[in-house]
Length: 141
Image 1 (cartoon, helix red, strand yellow):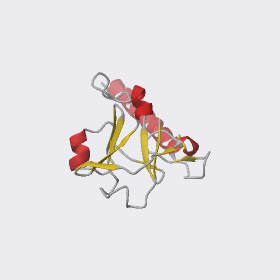
Image 2 (tube, rainbow, N blue to C red; image 1 turned 120 degrees about the vertical axis):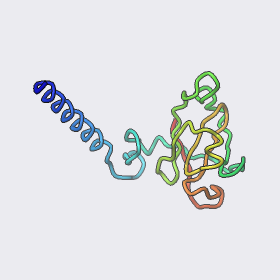
Image 3 (cartoon, one colour; image 1 turned 60 degrees about the vertical axis):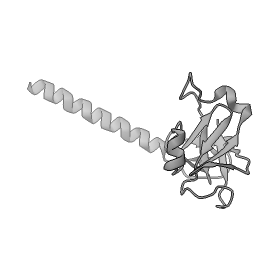
């Protein structure tokens, strides 16, 4: 039993060190195009973000929509509910969670979004009108 406890302790230490290492790699300064920025996930190249063209149409509640027909082949759908790799940004900061239920976007908002078939359903981080809040929206795919 004593040997098992030591082995378990070693595994916990290794796991903790691994997690710390991953966190350290994600810390980078927000910069101009071509530089990296801190994100909730992997480090993202700012130059790969594309502007999300408005105006955005009010769907319901906190939800706004914009068409993305050119990205329909990589979107979520009934067969593949988490296929989309699209990341939505508000003033360069990633929003989320992605793949959110449309009802959660409508009722909770808070930056939730869903790239569903040919449409992006999303909410601003503070549930404001993205057409009037003065923030820039962009995405990477």
